[in-house]
Amino acid sequence: MINYSFIIPHKNTPELLQKCLDSIPRRGDVQIIVVDDNSDADKVEFSNFPGLDDSSVEVYLTKEGEGAGYARNVGLGHAIGKWIVFADADDFFNPSIGSALDEFVD
Image (cartoon, rainbow, N blue to C red):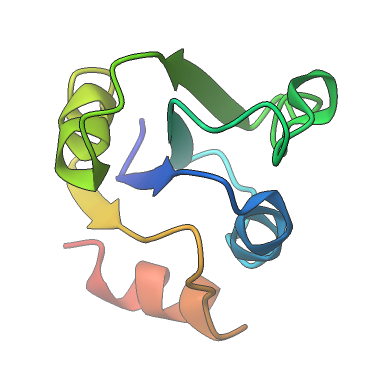
């Protein structure tokens, strides 16, 4: 059962996105969704996009360039968690996030 779907819109900040992804616990009840909102090829190396090589991360590349809200809505279309957690690509979570997820699951 997926309890938490983390949805992260992204544009042109792959280093910060990787830091965000690294701060999310990998566990069986967590789904991680990244939606790239038409990043520039000169700023993002798509063959080495953060999360592509991580089986815990679903990456969706959009070409619409409609902004973070649009990217979040794309992510919502793929979310299956009981709870939705929105983060921006330049956010990161405190290491205590795992215990907080356990505490508030119900």
